[in-house]
Amino acid sequence: MTTSTMPCIAMVALPAAGGSPSECLCRPVLQQKPKTSLKRRIHSPDSYNLNTYLRKSGRKRAIYIPVRAAGSAVSLEKREVASNDAERRLIEGLLGIQGRGRSVSSQQLKEVEQAIIELESAGGVSDPTSSSLIEGRWQLLFTTRPGTASPIQRTFVGVDAFSVFQEILLRDTNDPRVSNIVRFSDAVGELKVEAAALIKDGNRILFQFDRAAFSFKFFPFKVPYPVPFRLLGDEAKGWLDTTYLSHTGNIRISRGNKGTTFVLQKNIEPRQKLFLAISTGKGVQEAIEEIVLSHNSTSVDLDVLAGKWRLMWSSQPKDESWLERATNGLQNLQIVKDTGNLEILAEFAPGFRLRSRGNVLVSPNQQCEINIKDAAVELGPFKLPFKSTSKLTLDFLYVDGKVCIIRGDNGWLFVHARDDVSN
Image (tube, rainbow, N blue to C red; front, side, top):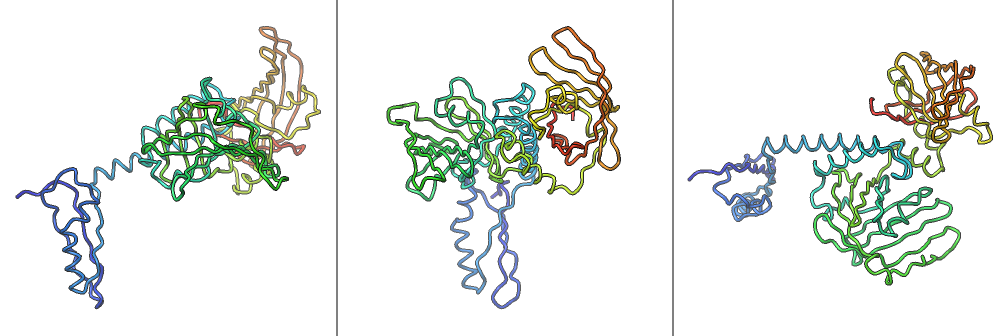
């Protein structure tokens, strides 16, 4: 009789009651059907007889430890490394995208879509609808919104000023639900639209919206959302495929029946909180403070600064003139060369922009001096140069490959996001 080449199952017995260690019990797995599952092999009659023998001899039950074949372990490790790298690039790619995809450049969209495809190809949790990791409250970070999206989808993902969540509850309940939530603010309340849910297979959830209500902090009761779901017919129905669920249960990628792709996350890192705050216009300075306090020091040099940086937010007074806002070197797009040369491009309308040039000098104490030497107003192909000299001293509060937070000598704060992919 020949033995099969299936992975070995090692059975390690616990020490006997008398204190002396019991012998290691291991035997080769004999000829078996190739498709017999690991679970069935563990609970085979032979295993039962072995445990019976151990119990009668005074030993404790054996512990069965499946030993994964080396090639399988290496392959799994490579997939996990690929997933971790793609997750990191997905999160990095989403930084700076406002409105959950409403304002996105073609290059940003390309990076995000590429990371999504790699994650879906690498594979996360198998049969995600059967995993407890899919349950809970997920925050919507990004979505594509094709013209075929349903009115319900457009309502939720198009509210850029509010936070958008999705709650999934499938098990330990007689009423499985998928709910979309729009949070107006902690002080005001939220809108929750619920759908009855049904698991179709390991990836797909069928749903049908059936009720909705506003929960306002200043009302002791819920206010019904005036949508006649029963009259919507098929518009209130749909399905949601989970194409990627991370093994940590932190990132989920889903695709809807209307062709919409969703990227959701449970635990948001400080930089993501900052850009979400910028998108909603609330809590930006608090998010900045969290980032700065979580990093003891920031190392800055021209190699780090080199590239294109787009202004995402500033605490400048809104009553300042547009010329001052542009010529102070902190408006719209900054292009920093590794030689120290600086170009600032402020575009106020298509074809109408102000271009300034100067240089950047970084000091060892994490400060930088910006010197503006000349400028020109550009209207289409026409240029009107004028003399513009100014000097600014900036403190770097936080800088990495994607985000730059600085404070001017007047105390104003500025948040820039890298606008190129060279770094």
